[in-house]
Length: 492
Ligand SMILES: [Zn+2]
Image (cartoon, rainbow, N blue to C red; front, top):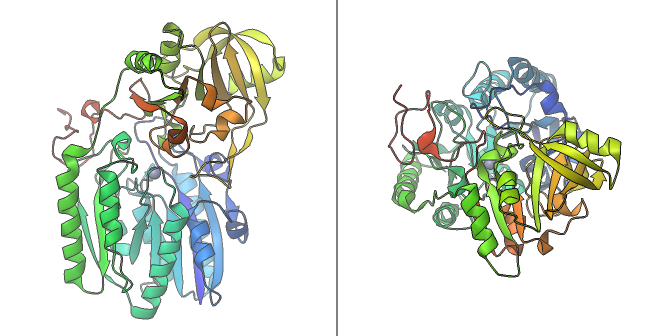
């Protein structure tokens, strides 16, 4: 049994003007660098990644043919050069392998390229052309996938993460393997696909609470040994494409069963719509609310719209300004992407004091000017310890923790964009998050896995950022016509 495997992941934020190019896929960031050949398996072993879970699940009779695996930090559209180069490497290798019994792809599902609004649909098309119509083709997707009809049609089966924070990525890869084996033994399943006609902002999607918690419990309830499977992708709202938004997949031996399961799940999703909590607070309200809380544990404030894990710049200053203005005291804020400032801190050395200009390089923002002390310096190789990424390493680049003098506020500055979602990203800098009064994280929901257990409360702040979460303010141009909650089509 020979199974070819490859991974090519990107979550594209089409509201960001910059492009995502080949070097972004080649370098390490929140995830490993581009891996090729056997390194796809050895370099991801033990990590919470779909392809690692797939490889781990393989039985002894399987000979894996690993091609490549790569991911870039979420950002603007993927260049044609990066897309064509990476997909050609996959299809060329498939050509060279000769006959394989099946192909598994570790994809995201919300990739948009310069030429293709449906990036994964195009990947699947090219792979299908390379392997022909008869070889089973299975892919796993992020739960933020914007699933398209092309993806559903070409892949024999798509399986999707069921947690946000995504603590089940490896488990999803293992599920892809089980269903692929089942398909090889019993044939391809019938499939059904349904799209919802509304968008769910990502800060309301987290699966630690209802309604997402119950919806995913119900999804798991459809799994049976006969190969029946239901999946729910809640969609990535910052990709202004036709197929943005939630969708449901169902697979079963009989078409009538697949249709019934998909219809049932769609009805449950529609019924849950009013329960999604889309509340956001202003930065001022979040900071003053946090300061008024008197529990022993820190209050976490999430800067949900400046999440680099959703393509934002991770350098906006709204929340930092609010902390300083309110004299919030013992607080830590991260991660601010500011390579210039990190370099300056490294040049001056630990405990140096200087006038810094922090973040704020984007439009409609300005750096925070402040006297700082260099609290800690690092080369930025930071092993994760939390449930989501534990076993992997964050590559932050040359980085520093700075204390804003006279305020008690510390900020963590990095040279590589990384989402702040693991307590190790503060502890690595000799900071003690559980002793702080306020922790500010540039993350939408992934921080919950590691930060919620030490927090007395979590507040979601709406400060300017490139990942819009108040969807009623978003001017979509390419999204299909939808219901008006909470998204309204622009007047255009
Ligand atoms: Zn995701």
